[in-house]
Amino acid sequence: MFSPATSESQPPKQFDRIQLNAAIQQLIESKGFSEEARQTVYEFGISLAAISRVSGSVRMETPGDSLTGHTQEQGSVQIDDDKEQVRKLEFGAERARIGAYKVWREKARRGKFRITIAHFWKLDQGTESMDEMPQAWCLECDQNGPLWFGERATRPVFEHFGLCLKQHLFVESWGAHIGKYHRAGLAVELSF
Image: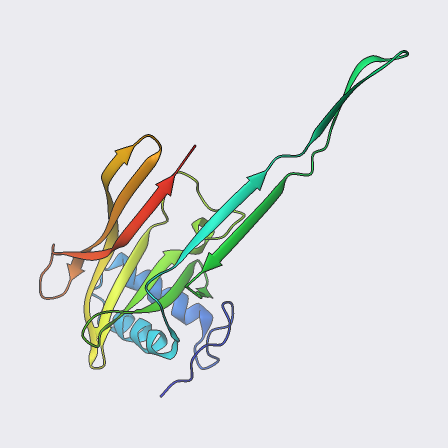
């Protein structure tokens, strides 16, 4: 049995990062049909600590201040303070970075678990997209091995005056029911 990972950036030492990144890429390109890639990702996934299905982030931005005054020599003067403050609070998921991807394990129903894979550059604070979700894939497993593989799709459920509710789904591309939709959670977005 593998020992759980202890930090976001450090996967267990028994896995070669380059080979694992290649296996993830092969799994995605084959849409789950590569048995060797499925097994490699499964073995890495069971070594990760399972996380709660509830996760999220809150980002607050406050612009800098400005001061306006009047002097006899210069007339009206405005001084801007460019010290914009950004605060971000994340909760729920610790993700292992493997090459171009972040990987994490979530608990699912009836003793199953999901190994979720997403591109890291759209998940991190400095490079995340404000208008587009990162591509994500899921390998659902139980203790015997992988059950199905699919890519995430998103559909809007409700939109009204800056409030948007979206449903995430995984579309099965390998498994017993190809084309089946599996629920992957809800996202609430609020914009002013």
